[in-house]
View 1 (tube, rainbow, N blue to C red):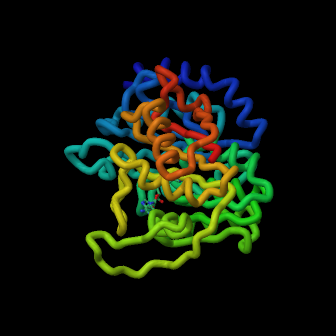
View 2 (tube, protein in one colour; view 1 turned 90 degrees about the horizontal axis):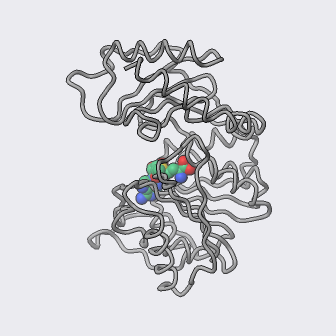
View 3 (cartoon, rainbow, N blue to C red; view 1 turned 120 degrees about the horizontal axis):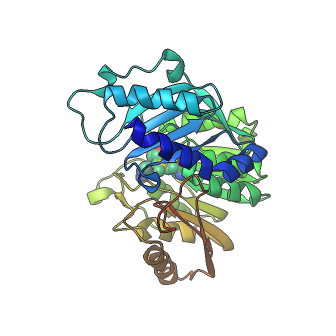
Length: 337
Ligand SMILES: C[S@@+](CC[C@H](N)C(=O)[O-])C[C@H]1O[C@@H](n2cnc3c(N)ncnc32)[C@H](O)[C@@H]1O
């Protein structure tokens, strides 16, 4: 495995040289160092988050000797000191990999990494599976930060509020971060504090996104199967920028989030909650959905809602997320509404 990965890792790092220089200039020390199938090893990713390097497998787990060899290779190849952690997120291994991989306690503490000079908390192991910052969304965070001055911003599926922090740091007049997971919003609040974001411009809303977005858009809110439930009430209002980056699938109290079968049920309230002349930045991370067909879904949905999109621009992830066919799994559409 290491004989196989050594030349591939070196090639991946060589390819990233221009990006690494650009990221260093902008004050970023977190990036994907190795990107699975697109760089020759399906199912293996290696990410740097400041002082932490995290390897992850999404298909078969690495055998114990393979993992040791990978760590050794990374230590001899990367020009900085780091703590190393490994997580397996693919097929269930014969025995729990935690049995033979115990990261050093150092690797399990919280880290602070930097992106564009902003600070973000990172944890390799916690209750969830993602380490608190999605690296492939960097290009979108950069765009939001550079274009939010004076705006009102609605950040749906906010997770740890990376996008919200960028909007606030970029001078947004107010940022609403909506997510139903309190644990994610807690990290978001701490991310905001780390970056001296004024709390009065940074609102955390612990609520189902569909329930919140439909109210803000002036649409009725029902209950799943007609059931009664309690939810936070909002008056209809519009935002200059709505950011919509949902997970591929999730169960919700009103309806399931399903990016393959039903993007419109999220996109419609997002468009209606954006002011005419404003923007919706929408993302879809399902690899099997092609960009062109998805953009068509967005256009049809907005037109049907009476708010045809005036313009749509595609935003590609940075070069640490290469793809064979210029069709990376994460698709980002910047929609003028
Ligand atoms: C893919 S992440 C979103 C990533 C995020 N946009 C970012 O910038 O990093 C998924 C998030 O969606 C949240 N989520 C999933 N379904 C939800 C729902 N129906 N309402 C509110 N939050 C939801 C989860 O709690 C999780 O924090």
